Image (cartoon, rainbow, N blue to C red; front, side):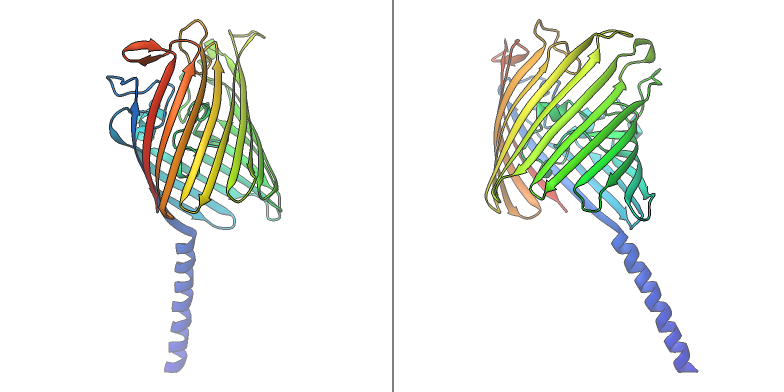
Length: 358
């Protein structure tokens, strides 16, 4: 009798342990910290770099770009993420949100709606579907973000329906969104915003992407529809050398109820060379044209028409830590910068960063 009871107790304990182990595997925790120092030769007295930079944008001070802790829950048919953050990225990118929302990096949940297909519905605050650069520096080829990345959404809030083929080569998604990088909607704006994404990976070394956005960023009484297209391709030419090429183009109505539009566009190319596992070298060339100030308003005759170059060197002493240094130069058609206390068409700055993930 005692032997039977002991066997039954052992089976119960084994089952409980197995369930707890499964829950532990389903729920994981991670974190990320990215510290930086940037020096702008324009030497802005208020320590703020030009207003169209939203990352690494404090001058001549050691600072935190972003730091977050994240919980991820993942099963075969349920998933979710919740992360809290701090840093200058949160300060500037979420300046328009109410106080309680400014420190939320991610807060989303999803479930699989098909037994036989990889079809998911996700809702909440999620990474943006636009662009190949994210707010997490370690995942980007350059230290600072491109003009293109800093002026398109890093995050979005809404509902997403996403489908991935069984061979993982094609991903399709449609979204209903609160707006262009918005958690809370613009006051007096009831216009729905939508997004789409198509990602195709014909081989393990090639990624092709087309993302779109359509929405109104004004109160409905001043409604100006914006239509945006994001194209990019990433190519791993060899084990040590990769290329990313992108082109974005967007239009926005000049006035309400008109068929006349202002246009902005931006081509970019990034090269990455990894001579060994501890060193990476990235080079970038970019151009951003927004003559009428759809996204970047300068109030100058030619608007924002700027070309830029950068070169960065990364050193990885361990798998989870990276030191980076980058030199960057911008040249604009109008004198929208400051250099030696005078208006200038040129802007030069050097940035270093240290990022740790765990």
